[in-house]
Length: 265
Image 1 (cartoon, helix red, strand yellow):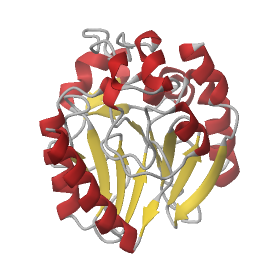
Image 2: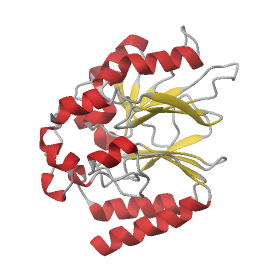
Image 3: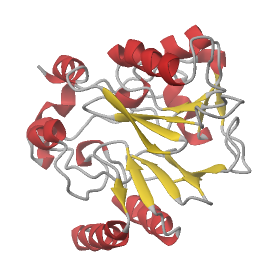
């Protein structure tokens, strides 16, 4: 079962939806990826944020071809971090499109074959946590295709967006934020479904949560990262796991999440 099960599940309910005028959410069942860039703009400039599982390759190409055009490729691929469910298709996609990949500088060792992630902790509780020791934790190797994100916070290829260092789940985890529209692509630091539960993952039952507990390295840093994102007053949160969170629910749920983690520490 384990990772092979997640690979199969990632094909069960794949779909794409416009969540803002320039963000398309790719629901890959066990994880989300994002196309960022207005498909109706003359420039057709866009980026891909995260790449799902290894078998997400074809679906991502289908959505890009449908919304941006068959001869259009992203300016780059940005990874929120290097865990297996976010980088599964990155090598194939980067080679197919011949585009650069960007990560936080602290995440570089994990995507260049130099450092492996810690093993998952199955003692957290829940079916997914129980399966987690079998999840891939070894480094992929993007070689010369991968670069550190610019120090000025800008994201190559898409003006108006910036990246924010949000460590805790991993050393070099990042989130992306659009200041004008207050759109937050959170990565794993904020989830809207309980990642430890297989049923919650499959049904996408909404429950504000932090990152998957079985793969999270430092909860004090997670708390600081969430408080930083909370201070931005996002209007919409687009998590890597779960459904988008909008409007008045955002502040209420972030307050709940901060309180929950503070009690846990």
